[in-house]
Length: 440
Image (cartoon, rainbow, N blue to C red; front, top):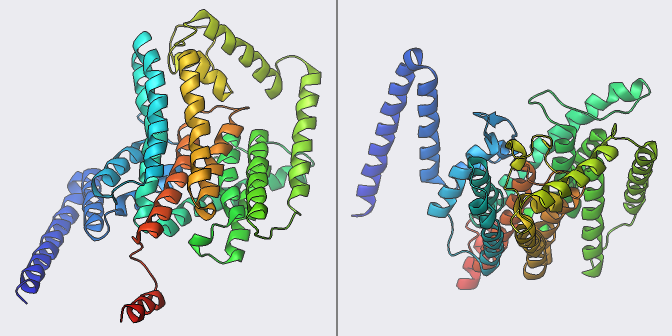
């Protein structure tokens, strides 16, 4: 009784203070407009955090898919990922699991390897991108850990997959008029925000792979996974992002292989569309190469591959030209981001940086594949690996396209640790009753 009364009094005072603050903000709206709205959102987030420490990372999860720019420098995703990282670091479940710590050390190794190019090429964009790269990998892993370890893995994945399914619907609908007119062109969306075909394809490939894997710990019925898989796959096809087709085919094959090796039955029908996608991509690529010139995507990429080597040879072989060198005037004739992960890192950070990148980008999926149980480790490893496969034919360091795979990996890491350590405080009533009966 002595402890209950002060708690009740404290709760009543907190509610009263919140009510007065909301009234004050409401009165300030006509005069201060947007500032009052921002203040209201802050109050909402702070109040929700008092109830659920991971409320802010969960609430911003759908916005982590946004590529819209804030101030022309960072995307909305980057802008929200940074404070979400600090919320998890201060309020999230601890200690980190040994596997998460190992993954963060692999990320730290890459950061150390690219620190040499930051020192050797002192300019603002170089240093900014160095921190940005850490946020996209290490920051996303920690945010995902906070959601998974906090028991919010299901709503977090729902808030990621639902927008992906919606984008898939929009892309498929946008492709229908073109198909009706007898042509099949890449889809670029203008609503709700402008989305490039390569971004659509890459993002939806992640969602399709997760839906195909159907992680059992999420507990959704099979029909939900099937709907998500169909919608996201249609979006990937409509985008005509061929590198996304290859990445999704890779992800499905790896998931299928692991399921069958572990004894889980999985139909082999999926191999037919996978083989068809690989065949179509190969034929399209051969046709474009046979055309010659640089007036198609294959020709442009071949030219950019060669020019990327030129940039590397004209700069420091060991430390590169600097991160985001294409935003500087160091190479005024080469204003492009290399459409290949290894060439991008080689030209930016040299041989030293490329070694660090390979250690991180291959080491983290291998680590998660080996150390996590298959029900968690499969998608935790496959989705980041799909990013590397995708970027053999496209840009690698593109905000959302990098952070989302590592966010998903972090969610799997946190969920696996929560199960192992008994952190799942959201157990169902039957489980609680069973535990109570066992205890008695």
